Amino acid sequence: MSYEIHVNGRAVTVDVEGDMPLLWVLRDELGLKGTKYGCGIAECGACTVMVDGQPKRSCRLQIRRAEGAEIETIESLSPDGTHPLQTAWVVEQVPQCGYCQSGMLMSAAALLRETPAPTDADIDAQMTNICRCGTYQRVRTAIHRAAADIAATSDEAEKVRS
Amino acid sequence: MKITRRGVLISGAAVGGGLVLGAFLVDGDVRDEAQEGHADGGDFFLHTWIRIAPDGTVIVLVPHSEMGQGIHTALSMMLAEEMDADWETVRAEQAPAHAVFANAALARGFLMPGDVPAIFSDMIDFATLKTAQLLNLQVTGGSSSVRFTGRFAMRQAGAAARWMLTKAASKRWGVPQGEIEVAHSVVSHPGSGQQLGFGELAEEAAALDPPRTLAMKPASQHSIVGRSKPRFDIPDKVEGKPVYGIDAEPDNLHYAAVEHIPVFGGSVVSFDATKALAIDGVDKVVEVEGGVAVIADKYWTAQKALRSLDVEWDDGGHSEVSSQDILARQAQGLTTGYFVLYRESG
Image 1 (cartoon, each protein chain N blue to C red):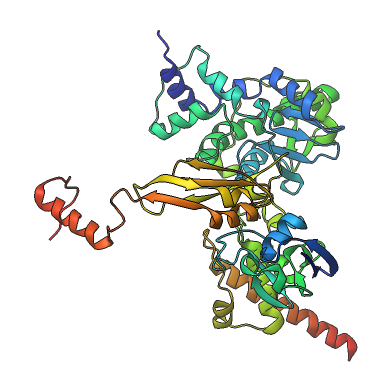
Image 2 (cartoon, rainbow over the protein chains, first blue to last red):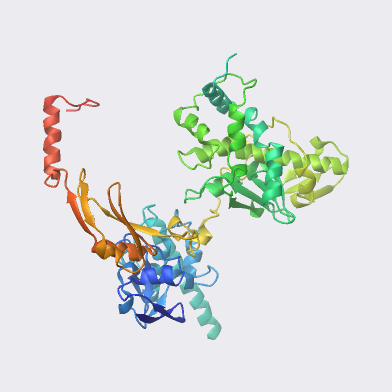
């Protein structure tokens, strides 16, 4: 079967079986390997991407149910690694092995879109990604840093306008 | 004196800080091999693990895998410290999977009989010994990278490079090597006010052979080691760029998915692969230790085909065993004497 999806702003058509999970479409059909395969049962979150702005575990989302959707992967977070979350991730030295971090970042990006100034409770509720290295504390600190950076930037933009 | 391989390994490791290892780690032939086969245009190898670019950038080729433990950064710090390199101009690369970049020179040093002082230190334990034996491979593990490669090899390599650069400068300027200073990748002669960058001296330095014994800096003079430096591997990781095992794409790659035996101690009695083999993309179905594997052109195809397998399992008589059963057996073992007492309290 042929399915059309929009990946990182680009319309693509893939010819695969309808039950192929989006994860494998991204990795094997489109060569976007920043998104990782972890548990395969939608638990760990290593495969998290945004589907129409919502964070989704792509390992259990069949392509036929994603038809026409806007998909965003780690490759689209910024062209040069300068998204406020990526900057904060570097400043706080978040990743260790890094395998889960694409999913972490996409979950965090989705969180900040909905909740620009998240509390610890907000972060804990949304960030259900599992990290074997145990980066949770740094993930939380980095999300707060990114949220503050985004707020500071928009404050400045506000001042320039007024 | 009879020197056994084991004896040389132990004493070689014990005196590594400047005698045995220092000599072999900067083996000129190995360095030339690196230069001939692996230098980019204009770069010069001062050691198999140190390449200097024309602009003075110090590239450290680390023979261990970066797995998030920070080893590319840590070993580069140890090397840069002894080299007096400007940390901002240091970067790390994964050493190619080639014998030149393995610790082959080090292993050869260990195995060469010679005037090895029979010094033993309490640092030498079984793990260190095993690690030494493995050093002619590119092995990462056992906390050996910093305490062995770093402590006994990267620091020496850095000190050797510093010596080569200062020697090159002393020849060019016609001044004693001892009057030359190095700081932040600048080689200078305070008496005459002359100075040059690493990149400008690299070619001449690369032609020199450093002495076998070089003193390491005392910790009190460290300005890089002992400070927290941002890890080299993190920027790529926030962009999803690193290539993990699952991302590798060797030619003609196929994937296997395994249907595991559902019970410990069980086995495969028989399986019918007819339906699985009929699936487009499935190559083979084979029995493997612990289950039955489907091999296909894509991982998803292999995984999905597992559902079409018809396997008859033997449970080995264990399918009814519960956690309670195991606890009961352990309790029974305590009363029948099949145990070793490590600690008793209460």
